[in-house]
Each structure stands twice: as C-alpha cells, then as structure tokens.
Length: 318
Image (cartoon, rainbow, N blue to C red; front, side, top):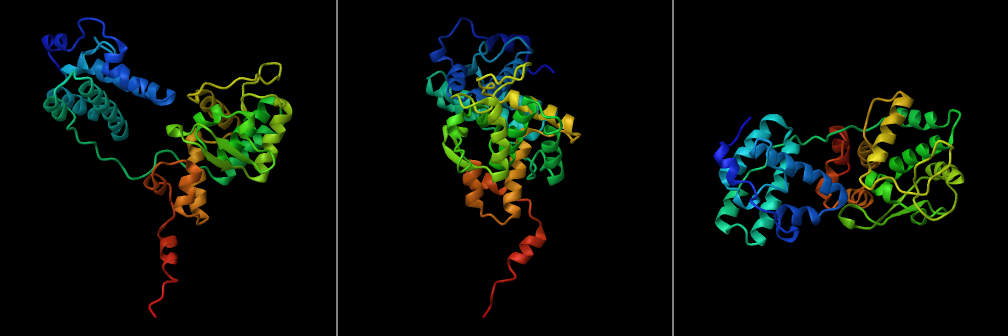
C-alpha cells in the first residue's frame, strides 16, 4: 500500500548524513536498553518503510519533516494489518522520535503537537499468552531428569528459576553466580526493567534443582545460567542479553516434554496468577514481579467472581 506520492517521498528523505547526536531516531534509540532498542528500531524501520514505499529506514528518513497527515496515515495503515497492542507500541516509538526532533529544535512546537495527536487503539483488557498448569510444569521438569545430561540439568534450573522467581528472560540471562544466595534461595536481580534492582526467592525444591546444575557448572564467577558445549562442559559466558537464547531453550524444552508451546513470559504470568490465587496482596506481587505500576500487576489477577463474592462475605453491618 502506497501512502504518499513519489514527490512527497522525496521530501522525507535525508539529503545528507546527520551526526548521531543530532539525529532524533538515533538519540531516542540510544536512550533505550538493549532489548527495547531492538524492538523500537524495528518499529521505526517499519514506519519509515511504510511512509516511503520501502525507500527509507529509521536512519535515512527525515523525521523532522513529518506532519499530522503523515502520522495519521501511518496509524491508519498499521491499524489495518497489525494487532492493537503492536500498533500502540509502534506509535509510542513514533511519538518519542518526534519529541526528540522537537527537543533538538528540528521541528516547531505547532507541527510537533499536531503530529503526535494520535489516539491509541483500544485493546482487550485480557492478558496475552497463558498460564501453565501444574501438570505442564511437572512434565517440563520431569523431561529434564530422564537420563539427564548436563544440558538437561541446566534447562531444569532455568525452568525452576522462571517458575518460582517470576523473572524476565532478559533478567535471567544477566544473572551471575554471586546474585544467588545458596543458603536462603534469594536471587538479586541487579538490572531489572528500567535498570531497577529487586530480590526474588526460590522455593526449597527449586533451589535443589539449581544446585544440581551448579554441580555441573562449578563455583567459578560468571554467568549463573550459561551455554553447555557438546562435551557437556558449561561455558562460563552469558546468553545474549536480549534473552533470545532463553526463549529458544524454553521452546525446545516444551517440545521435548510434549507441552503446548508457550513463551518464557508465560512463566511470569503463571507466577503472578498463582500468587493471586494464594490471596497474596497486589503490592507484594508487584514487588516480586518488578512492575512499575500496580495497575500492570492487577492485570494478572485471574481470580473469578466467586472469589470476589467470598471476599465480601465477612463484611458486617452491625
């Protein structure tokens, strides 16, 4: 689908290289963490390509030339082919780049305010993904202990940490051995989302599984969870910080266990949902999950109407 005429596309192309310190997209992307930078760069590339019929990417589009007619056309085009949550994420990237253009004095305030006046799409209140059943989790762990090899023990440790620690795959990839207290089972997440630090806790059962892995890994400093070579030796290096290695590991383990496909983040959904099922208060779940807002945490509360009904039965009138 072509949004603009050939002449309009020409006006949106950068005519000469721009220093990264004065390039709105470069400045915005440089402010993000590794995982976010990758996702938002992809979003900006798609937007630039959409506007110019494939002739520009994030770094060759002149973002300062965008006006409301351009951004509104992008929103409409994205809405026709992508999910609402994806479109909204891409619009966030678009607005942020335009903000950088304004702060760099590349676009006037009037044009900036009009260009970003894009309402977000309405999304379903339900959560994406799914929660795993206790039977599925048991099957995943059991599959790791059928004639276990070093890589199987490593996978079991990954499942144990994701299941009972509720951490993100990127956070798991960054953990080092020193982050684990082997006496208490606590794990210090040094660099959570937004570079925030928090402490999570493993169950005694989960800690035993991690200890099985550490017998293979050894006690040398370095990555807590690391690749295993063909000879069964642990390589003391981290998986990529974007967590792609953890994602692939979980996908492969689900296949081996005969469990319906799921993502590492579904362990997080399961973690939060199970805590709510155990009547854990929202603030505690929020702290353990590392959510910035209790509103985000509340979305994981899957308890039904019967739970709500029972909650009010103890209220007294006299």
